[in-house]
Length: 193
Image (cartoon, rainbow, N blue to C red; front, side, top):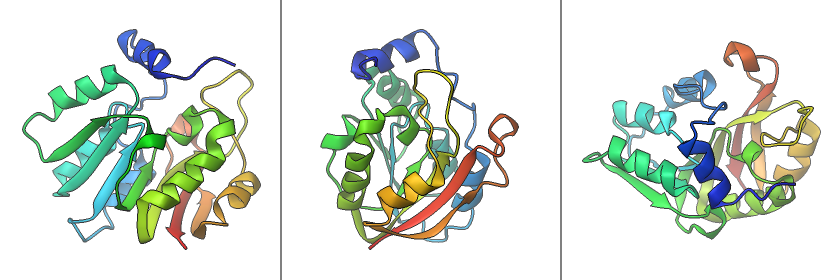
C-alpha cells in the first residue's frame, strides 16, 4: 500500500489529481448545514482539501470554522482563497490536532485515510468533540475494486467502529447524493456519548 503522507497529498493538489472533488459542497452536507440555527458552533472540517463546505458555512454566517489538512499545498490554496475571512486554516495531521468542537463535518476524509487508522479516527474524533458534539457527513457504503484511496466500507463496519463512542442518530443511504455517488453513500449524524 502507498504511503498516504503529506508528499502524497501535495502531489495530488500540485498535479490537479483531485477526482474526489465535486467543485461544490456535497448536497447532503449543505442540506444539513441549512438546518443549523446556531451560527456560533465551533466546526471542524478535517482533510479539508478544496473546502467547499467551509465556503458554504461562511456564506451562511457561521463564525467559528476550522480547516485542517496535512497537505501544505491544500492549506496554502485555502489561505489565499479565504484571505481576510473569519476562518482558521491549519496545516497539520488530523491525528495530532487538538481542539474542542461542537461539530465535525466528514466529507471524503475518512475514505482517504488508510483503513488501519479508522479506529484511531473514531477515538480522536470523540476526543476533540465537546460533550454531545456531533460528527455529520458522508461515508461510502461500497467497496472499490482498486487500491485506494478512496477506501470503501459498509454500514455494519461503521456501526461497530462508531457505536462505542457515539450514539447513532442517522446512518442511512443519502437520498440526495450527487448522481455518480447515488446509492453508494451513507449520511451519518452521530452524537458523542
